[in-house]
Amino acid sequence: MSHRKERTEKTCLNCNAGVYGKYCHICGQENIEPKETFSHLVTHFVYDITHFDGKFFSSVKLLLTKPGFLSAEYVKGRRSSYLNPIRMYVFISAFFFLFFFSFAVSENTIQVNSTKRKFTYSQALKDINTQKQKVSHALQDSNFSPIARKAFISRLAFLNEDEERLKRDTTHLDELNVYSVIDVGSTYNSVEAYDSLQQKLPAAKRDGWMGKQWKHKKLQMIEKYGGNFRVIISAISNKFFHYFPQVLFVSLPIFALLLKLFYNRRKEFYYGDHAIFSIHLYCAMFILIFFEILFSRIEDYPYLKWVSYIALLFLFFILWFTYKSLRNFYKQSRGKTILKYVLLMFTSFLVMSMLFGIFFIFSVFTI
Image (cartoon, rainbow, N blue to C red):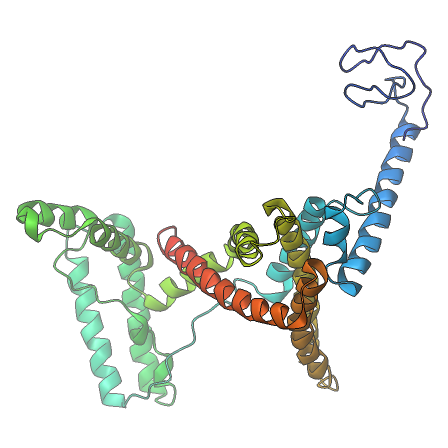
């Protein structure tokens, strides 16, 4: 409610309806003077922030201390005292992923580990020379674009650097660039060359749509990254990690649908009720995983190794919290809740695996 002066005119400025009292009974707009001083703006801003904060912290407290309670209150229609579930999800998920990408992971830490295979000096030197010949042969191919040629010139420089390093030090053979390269000595060295070759083949022997798309993407990656497999995997990993919020967002309505199927006999619950429960559960998971990651990072500091036990307790608490939320919201017996909890976790795992697979493939085709 605003503290500004009420208008003497009893016509709504928003919808022109007659106003009886301070609020329009048609659109709900408050019938106050439209001109607003700077002090009124500041007062309104402070009021909104404190009002949001009050609802937010009280709602989060209930969310974590009384699993399933907020969802039950919302379904019963008791909503004005609590933060709207959608606003809660937007705020908490935004904060969580800001923390996740800023502190928990970064592009510099998402890297592919070097292979642990051991190589002899002669084998390493032979492999370097083999790769140099392939790259040199690729540079003579006119089908490659200027961008690809630049990448292969850079690749050749890496291999020369490997050769010099190998002569100086033979103790780190598994770190050489030669062991992270895609074979560039293929029949076709560009998308145009591949398409031209496909056109010459009989229709029955041509690659299918999926095969064609994969060959196109493979050739594009070779052109963009110079055939460096390690760099390609790192780029895919970075892209995939940044799809994580979208994966969870897509999984939320699917999780609600699973709840609808598992509790199909509970006719008093509509799909929207399951969705509200899912939103509250996801919000709680974001908060709990935030503390789990935080404690996991703190334990790396000296004299704080004991924090790892707290991080372990959080894992068990997350599992218990999900069960308790189901029990409190759906009000079923312990045995039924445990059975549905196990089945729900199993099917959710399958769904998440499928979504991760889809988004990983999407990451490959969008780098």
